[in-house]
Length: 509
Ligand code: MSP
Image 1 (cartoon, rainbow, N blue to C red):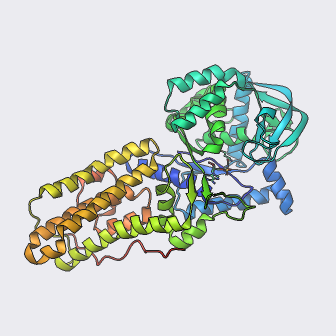
Image 2: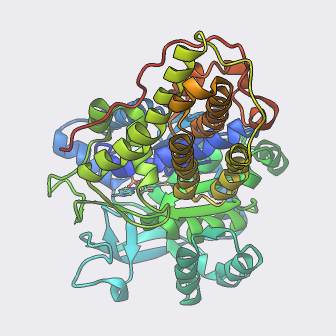
Image 3: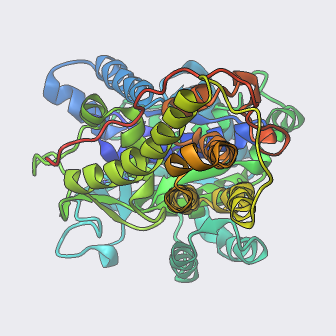
């Protein structure tokens, strides 16, 4: 599972937090499902943009990238995003991978020396054709500048049009969501021009092997991080067979999660580069949408950039992760509002799961000598229906996660908790206390079983809170993987502590 590697010309904001949290949820989910996962992230530290940002601040590019890369690490820590690899493009190992990839492209005849003139947007680190400009700006709204004719290496992207289209057709799941896939197809069908892949106008980057007046185009450098994270190319000079051995384990199932703005680089340029280097393609490329803030584009100049760590300070890490993943369909654009965050977190976490836990466990502790009741009656139709909903959860969540519908995964959990709250209100265990204590025990046991399933499945999204729920339910740490959904259960007789509130309620801003 990979996030894009983040540019270091700017402080981390909620958009970056979004991609990272999403990947962390996907990685944790698969790990709990028993799969071997390698979760990679990092920082994209080369290029003109960084060179200029450093100059503006009067520090060296290296000082700048060290500082901001550190902020991205802190962002990950603060959000409890736990990558296995953090690639920095200034790492020696990464630069070696870039040089190796370049040589392979060159050896295969995919690179030639020509000259380039045209429009370039430093903010997007992207070349634009005259015909793509809108009112003298990039289609993204970024400023473009004219690059006067300079010698440049080119990648023969135009050779790959047919092969790419065939590959997309044979692998209909490669690019998602569907609407984005269609955009990519339309773009490729519209014809591909060769891509300028080196610049001579700045120095901060990886010199082209054998011609160090040129710096490798920052996107080639950046995309190679997905390989360098896996140790590519193995031994120095890496024989092709060596590459394959190292990549074998994780590369065939690689999932790139990217924002919609950088899909073209991942779904067109990257596959073509891999084809040219004779490397296999990743399994899936998923593009998520963009966040606006109260309906407006987030930008430094608007002064409306949301610092995710400030959210964590104020609301805690799990509510922040929850809101980011639950509020918007993963793949669509979303609008950030603190008010909706508070409403959503209060409703789904504090009032629904939190309250259910608190009520249930308080009754258990009070009425059954501080332990899970031992004598439980026959299950009724109602009980069985509830337990059935809980046992269907795993399949539903798997289905959602395997297609990156993270919001859908959350909805399944929210729905079962909702149903359980209705069940408790219908069963009125607090009334049963006098009339039928055994029935009370049964109802509470059913709810604890459901909470156990819900909390196990919530671990990828709200790890800390889910484990607190499991602690309160007396589920041992060794019994929390998804395999235990079926094989485990709440143990009668387990002593339980008096429950404490897990999800605080927040005031509206
Ligand atoms: N460095 C490149 C990626 C190279 S990957 C080989 C880059 N970096 S970025 O820092 O600009 O963006 C990183 C990610 O953050 C992208 O997936 C981008 O879509 C995401 N977001 C940046 N702003 C965003 C929002 N406002 N909303 C949602 N995601 C956004 O691109």
